[in-house]
Length: 441
Image 1 (cartoon, rainbow, N blue to C red):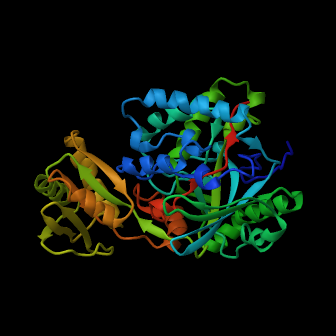
Image 2 (tube, helix red, strand yellow):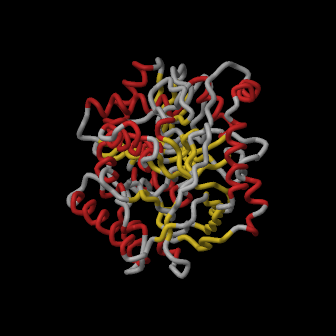
Image 3 (cartoon, one colour):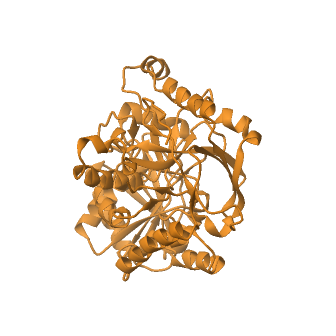
């Protein structure tokens, strides 16, 4: 394997894909952390796939995480991984990046699949690492995901990582010469996932140009000029899949502890496969992530949330019978939906910068006191309304979108945002599993 020495934590991977004659519309499946309250989506995917080779055989949708039969599902996933490699369903490609073009919901965006050094990532509050979480990391979400990754011979990436590249120096030059690259796949994606095309970038000159452009973005003086202050450079900001990246980090820490020092640098599990995207790509849209609380009478939930918001912020008014729009500034308006109708919390002096922070702080306090209830994070206001109206013990919250140009400056100056602040597109726009990589020595 060619060593591409660099200071930006990038490994040039050798990804694995099925043969060219594979039906990639059945091979590619959306990220595991989508449609978590809609098991019918996953049944529809399985019905469409039938017996064809598919990544759905290689991961556990989080809709089934913690449910009966989880251990058997994980065992089957590992057996499928081994079988796919042994039977030639997955074949290793020449070392290189994968340039990706994704068109969905009227938008087209570009990305580059590569591997990032988990030693360069720290999700803790106040982190100054090269790779950073953009939202709060829920540590309790790591162990159940670690059960899946630990001992698995392969990884599949749904992690999207953002770079701040206004001059378009990293990904876009490859787009301009994509006709000269080897096409790996070109397929429609199931269940309204749009279309995706991938090309192999295995030319040493082009690989080195990417690494040089990333190095220039990481230059301390250039970073200071861009942000106007002395801050440790932030090169890679987690866009989607932060908890999967954190799980890969936890898995690596366990493996690393068992390795002699001289074997740590080269072990494949030290790196995680991701797709990087330029935050300035016009095809990238930040969507809000809404909330639904299950298992708590909606009228009681309104009272409890109002009580917590008053403790945390001050004056809070509950308005019912009319939909309002969430906003920032000196007032936060947080719309809700129940089986009985619509309304909103009006928070006049919020202590958090964003409405999502005001709501999340109150939800955390309520759920701590009422463990019988649970919250899910939902893409799409229509899904929130549908779920909230299903039962008097549900309540949904509809939140505003964050401007994507605010992301890097906010993380640089203020640190991570409240968790689940934004999403890069709605559920069907998320990354679909395609490429695989061996993480075994």
